[in-house]
Image (tube, rainbow, N blue to C red; front, top):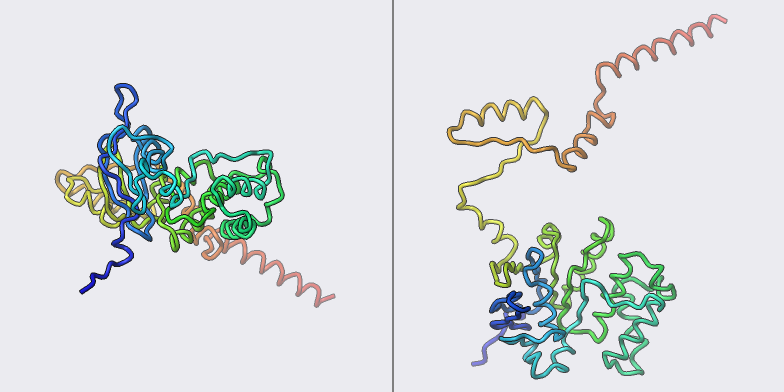
Length: 314
């Protein structure tokens, strides 16, 4: 009887006891985790936690002092060429040549990656369509926006159709519109590739990723789905409660909560979201008139009526 292995159970990356030191500083400390096929993984951690160092070791750009990384069955240290063929890598700062056009740059990258000459043009057209940069292919990269430069970097990572995409801070420095565009692009890439991305934007990780890895001081602190991690603090003795509504309703709620013994109440400053909701609420958009506005409208209507009566007398 043959066992059936489901797609989501296949491990495409296995990191075992990975360690890297810089002098006395341990950047990555015996880190171990597995990445399943066909999922989007978020790699979270504060600055200096070891995220970029780990990604550089996973892609073969940096040799570990201890431990190993296996990509699709290939040890990155023992079979670097075979392992790297399975990986598309976008560093935090994409290695772009600003005096090239996207098409020229992708031709150069395709040659470095060993894409056969007769297939290069078709492969470049495929990744440009996938990242939606066809209209920019003849412009110099130096004249492209940050968002389009990220797309060019992603197109480079997609050359050769690798099994795994490793993206280091792909949304850093982008404006809100560009973040949405790159998020949607990563969503679409996740349908065909296994994606690992690091980010400081927690909301983006939660909205894009199927699984989250949290690293702290070079060690794995947590590994789970965003939903399960959200319940991590359930047994804590602290709970945050947000009250939204009119000022009067909020004040009444606060007075009621003050009656609860041992409860500490803090009133934070209004967030940008609160200000936006306040300024765009129905009583400010003309759907509900104030008494003063109603009086003005009634007076205007009376004056117009009197004007029409005088015209009839003439």
